[in-house]
Length: 295
Image 1 (cartoon, one colour):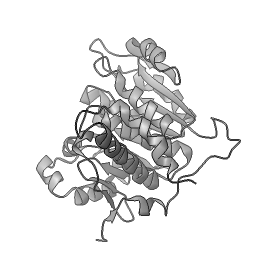
Image 2 (cartoon, one colour):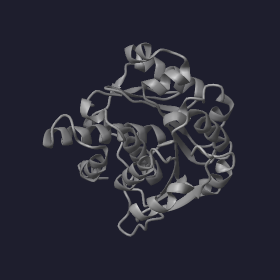
Image 3 (cartoon, helix red, strand yellow):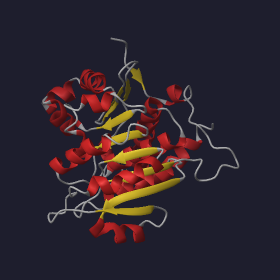
């Protein structure tokens, strides 16, 4: 096993982000589609979409449950909004995937999962959409991750990369391992999952790990306790999607997103305090952090 590489500014300077030309329009900067949300977690997709725009994507489309679609559209005027149907309990209905599928070809990066509130329907939605998304970089977050282990055929036979972004609890549900085992050896677990599913793994935690099927693994050691707050993971996933949409390769986008998310937390901790800053404040830090690494 090769040594785990540290994610820091020195590493990032060796993998610069693609930077738009002066005359680039919003379409050339890439489009992110975020599918997710629920009545009990309506803001998650907004956080992801905002983070994608702050990371430099040109356009964002949010696919959300019909009952919240108008409110989301009003609150987030920079984003397009499309609706999918839900069951009486508010979870994606059997027809939801069919309503989301037409948005997949529009995406340069497709993010699924933020804010979905019921595991079985989230797993089913991920399974169906994966069958129609081999030509787009697909990022799977939250409960949509947990049912992927037995779908290796879908995850490994793709034209474009798959990226998953679990926290230790979701990784435990995915693998059947205990959270304590995962926290004790996150690198080995992330590498095992990356190999099995043939995907890039961003295993979130106090020391976030990025693993890939073939190649070195990376670790970001700088996360602070303030990042362990509601919505923080939605922001990380949105930054990742935004960087992919701009044209960054999957592994590099994962490394960059982990760094930018962590450093945004560090800046807020220094300015506001180690606890109490909000996930919605993280995206505001992203443009300035990127500007320190001109393309």
